[in-house]
Amino acid sequence: MATPNIAARAPIEVAVEAGKSYWWCACGRSSKQPFCDGSHKGSEFSPVEWRATESGQKWFCACKHTAGKPFCDGSHKKL
Image (cartoon, rainbow, N blue to C red; front, side):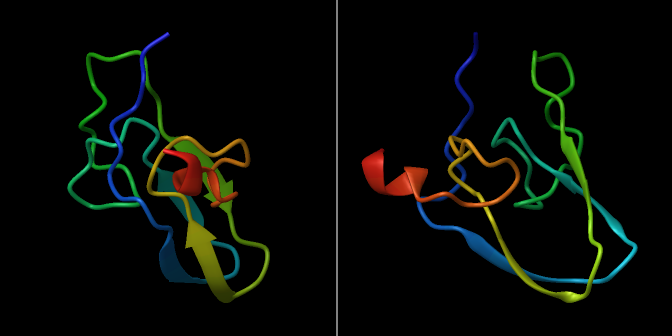
């Protein structure tokens, strides 16, 4: 299994909108972190879709090692 690139060692806060889908970058290569820009093409990674049920602030994982994809679970503190 391939190891994702670490895009950052801290989560990224995003204001999300209810009803909208967000495509989280799982490979760590995207230039539009924490979201996918298609940079995973040709790799074994695929973006993760998450649909907001309510508007508000969410903390998306940027280290790409979270067990709670797409959100930060503190894994970056162990890298």
